Length: 126
Image (cartoon, rainbow, N blue to C red):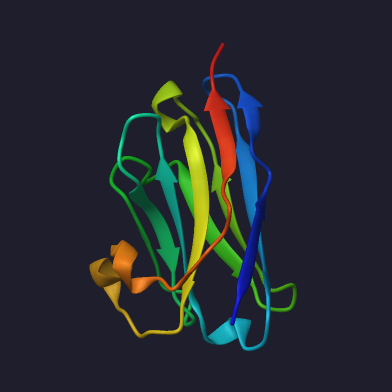
């Protein structure tokens, strides 16, 4: 069992940066594949980025080159560094975890993930 708690959201101007954190409780964090998803008002939840236990990472095209995912197994935490933020990045951002094996684009599937955080709001506005 894994519990996930996101933090770091807030209000930022276009072009600004934020770093989201997702703290995981429970054992064997290093064995979990981790991901970030987001849901904008009136839209379905969508994939943002994922990082495997072997530190391979993938990104949605909409955030590639602007967002960076990382993890610290000593702190049981996964991060999402967001730069050059745009108003269309406004959403609730969710952290997710799965023990199931995945490679590449397969890791972007929401139904792969068994554990979810409560979400943190990111608002990009002037």
